[in-house]
Length: 392
Ligand SMILES: *[C@@H]1O[C@H](CO)[C@@H](O)[C@H](O)[C@H]1NC(C)=O
Ligand SMILES: *[C@@H]1O[C@H](CO)[C@@H](O)[C@H](O)[C@H]1NC(C)=O
Image 1 (cartoon, rainbow, N blue to C red):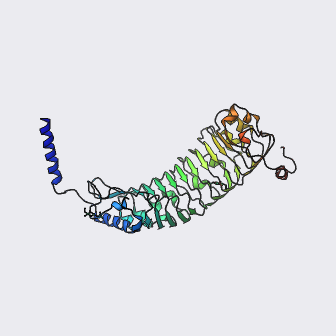
Image 2: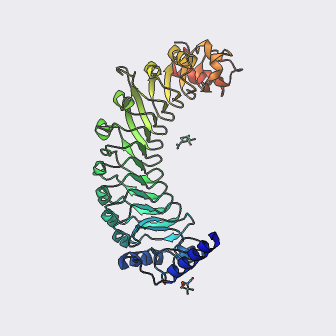
Image 3: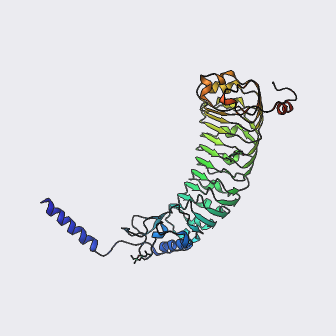
């Protein structure tokens, strides 16, 4: 009985699959764009085993089932008429990105990361009204970021990191009201920070040539911002209290810039702050170590290395270590003097912190402690800084 049923099912299914395809097919203009996309890529960079290698236009791109053609790189709408996603494999396809891509108006995802695309980012991308994810990460795109892209009202995630983009950030950047993640790190962007998109959670602009000072107007109204990476740029001026108090801020990296001061004498209430990690290393910051930094309840990692700080290591920093909050403390490469709090070098609480006090002007930093490596600056250097005295 069961066998008979199975046989019947088999017959039925083979009959169904022998019927002519009534399924709808890809919109001709979408096929045209896919052809143009493939045609703008050097054939010798398309291996037969890659996604693009499987794109055979004698077969409809969206119609199912797929066997040997369009097995990857493209996804379509449920009715198989429109291309909704282009995610190419990272196999170093080399070519330009055709401006015709703007005709794939149902596209929600465009990801060409880790290939060898070069030339400009087409400004026509701004027509992709449904685009949520745009990643051109790790290619060789040049030219500026088209300001028209700030019209992409559905955009949630933008990643142009590791290209060779130049010029300014679009002044209208803040109109990207749905954007939560933006990574433009490792390009050649210049100019100052404009007003930022209001719902950003992650901001990364590492390793560009951005300059100017941090202005509250850039960050105004950003209540979701958790991670800020602005390291290895040319920012100058003061890092002020408002920056430390950005409402949701958890970690920031402002290292390898040219900041000259931290102005947080009047910091205000830090009780509700989520700030966990601060990196201000490799700047030109002068003055005493800010005692206030120890008032952030969650602070776990503090890097102030290679600046021009003077004076003693605050006892409050040690207290933050002894109450198990602070785990990393890098203060090396400054002009700190006096005796560091002895607790740092006791076997109990002191050993729970990783970091360095090396290459300062400290007295009695025991060589037996990892924290005291590398050794302190030559006395002659410290004398010059402290006018003959190395003690406070
Ligand atoms: C493309 O598909 C057609 C139809 O199935 C087939 O005859 C042809 O050999 C394919 N071309 C390539 C390059 O695989
Ligand atoms: C910052 O500069 C230091 C010293 O030049 C270098 O070792 C480090 O890799 C740089 N960090 C970044 C993020 O560029």
